[in-house]
Every structure is written in C-alpha cells, then in structure tokens.
Length: 202
Length: 221
Image (cartoon, rainbow over all chains, first blue to last red; front, side, top):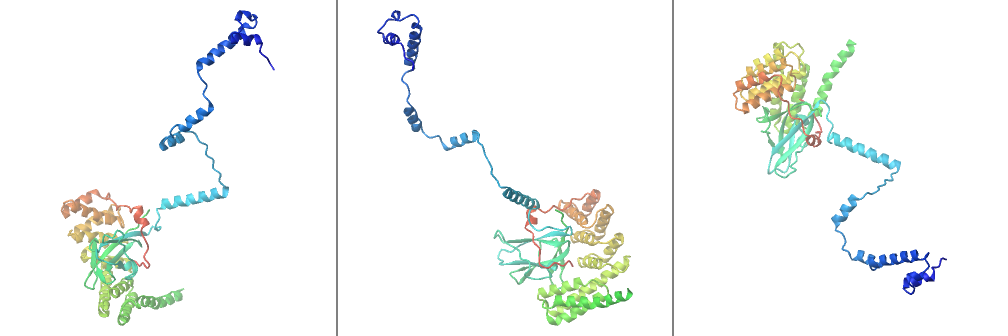
C-alpha cells in the first residue's frame, strides 16, 4: 500500500509552508493543489440518485415521437420458418397469384362468349331469362337485383351462336327485352329478342 | 361397309325421333306431341335441321300456348326451312346444303330480309358460315337502310378480309354513323371508305367474366 508523505499532507493543509517541504516533493504538492482547485471549480457532484429521479420526472414522449424514433432507429428482424411451412406458404402464394391473374369466374373456351341480360322491373319478385340457350326452361336462369333498384341482371357463358329469348317476370309474365338490338316474331303473337354471342378470348 | 352405312341410316331416323320425343315429353300438351314429332321426323327425312322445330315446340310449351297453335308454329318453321333450302339451291349452293346454312337463311327471312337480297349474299359469299353476314345486313335493314346497299357494304367487307363476327362490327359502325347524324347512304359510304378498319366490340371487364355463370342446358338453334 502506498502512503503519502505526511509533509505533503501538512503542506496541503497549510500547516507547513511550501518552502518547508523538501524540493523533490514540491511538484507533487503543486499538482495535487491544482487538481483540488479544478474540482472546486466544477461545483458540487451530481449523485446517481438525483439523475435517475430527474429522468423519471421528465414527461414521457408522445406516441408519434416514439413511433418516429422506432422507425428511425435500426432493428434486427429474424425469421424462423420451418422448411415444410415455407413450402406451403410458397404454394399458397402461387395459387393466389394464379387466381388473381385469371380474375376468377368460369374459364371460357375459344368457342364461348358472354351474354348479358338486363331488364328493369321495379315491382318484380323474380325475373328469369328463358330462351333457346336453356331449352326454354322457365326457371333455370334467374336474374338478380343486387342493388334493390329494380334493375335485374345476369351474365351467362354460352357457346357462340344466335339465340332467341324472353324474360319471365314473377314466374308468369312473358316480357320482350326491348333493349335488345334484334327482335323477331315468335309465331305465337309476340316478339322474341335475339342475342348474338360472340366468342371471347381473355 | 355399304351394309353398315345402310344400317346406320336406318337406325338414325328412329333414334332421332326417340331423342326428340324424349325432349318434348312433359314440356308441351301431350296431344300435340305426336303431331310435332311427325313434323320433326319429316324434316329429318328431308335432310332439314330438326333443332329449330324442337326449339319452337319447347318455346310454345313454355309459353303455355295451346297444342294446335304449337303444331301450327312448328309447321310454319318447317315451311321456312324448306324455303331456305330452296333459296340456297337457287343461289348456287352445292347440294346438300349444310343444316346450319339452312337455319341461317331461315333466320334471315324471318328477320325480314327480302329473298333476292339473301340470294345475292349467298351467291357472293360461297363459303359458309354466312350467319354473321346475314344478321349484319338484317341489323341495317331494321334501321331502314336500303337492303341492296346494306348487302353491298357487307359483301365489300368480306372482300376486304373481314369474316364472321367482325361483319357485325361493320353494321355497328354504320349504325354509329347514323347516330352521329348522317343519312343511311352517307353512313354506308363512310364505313365503306374505312374498310377493313372498323372498331371491334369492347372486351368484357374482368368483373363481368368473374360474375358470369353457365346455364344448365344450352342448345344453339
């Protein structure tokens, strides 16, 4: 254990003049005195406790500030995936992509097309389209009033060709589609509408 | 070989009759079925298409028309098919005419095309199918275009390389010119100048295709 010469203590305490200290000890006395002066100039030391309490008393940062700080600061993200799960995820993603690319709905062959039927029947409870494309079966192809605005519609996939049809409202009232571009006498005293289905390539 | 062909021909008639009768059973008054069935048989024996007759009978049954009116309507349809076949022969189509072409010509006559115009189109377009051409002309005639001018425009379109459903775009283009305020003659002139560049129909949207469904039974007439 090092001990300090008692004459240095006495010189620092002012009990012994500097000249009374041996010459080899005087630089040590001077350095210690200078260090003591420097510590006195810094002021009183801040304790750990007071620093912690100050941090606690400071108001918490807002949520947006914390989010900004979180976004700005770097983070390490680690994925741990089992190979079987990753394969299943990749398959699901591929199926989803295929579905989105196709747009859903039925697949049309090159000899098929779409026929859209639209009619306005505000008071109808049901509307069906009946024609040569469904062997004139009265209840096989319903239209829908999805918006409840009295406009009934459906879209049907049919082989390309020419078809005659009529609407059947509430199961009993046969109505010609006068929005159709083509009409033809039905030999029963009424007119059938005519739809020409063109092949559609998607 | 000849024997098997003869046997097939002998069997085809009764089989066709059976299938027609099966489709008619329960769909029209039972008293009308034998008469309709005999008309279908007759058409088959004459080499005419039978599907338009069956469709007409089914239509009458669905509309709850009386049996005699259904039979009368089927007789009218049979007469139209015979007229159509005769017209095809007059226009120079090689016998026997294709059933689809007989049906097409019968359609054209039903839609009000004058027989001489139909003959002219058949002669000018020797290669089937002519259905789209006939309907394109009929569409124009329905909007008071001169039948001869309308037929001339569609025949020109064929000579410019347009075929099948693209011919419907020609009549649509002429009708658009009419809507823009031109006279029928001006509309035909404008479209003829533009041939073969007539706009096609808009492609169906993805949503339209996605919402489409298939009917239970589909039979093109």
